[in-house]
Image (tube, rainbow, N blue to C red):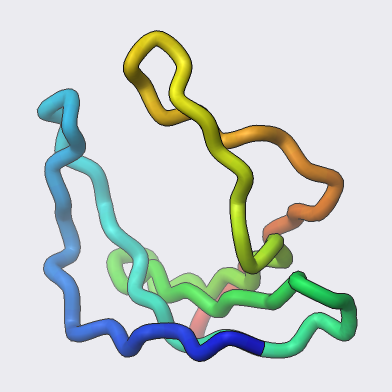
Length: 85
């Protein structure tokens, strides 16, 4: 499995390219999903004290469409969230 870069403490808000302010989740870790090129990513929504686990591919397919980056669909992907303490 590839190493995942460490993430510094992010701010809880980020501004997207279109100028919208969006909440930001904090990356907590990555786990083996038992399938080739698929991992489970653990994320924290600190504003609501919610932990989410995302089952997703390690690499996303993408292409440029009308000067915008578009991610192609895949057959792997799910999310499960639980309330913290």
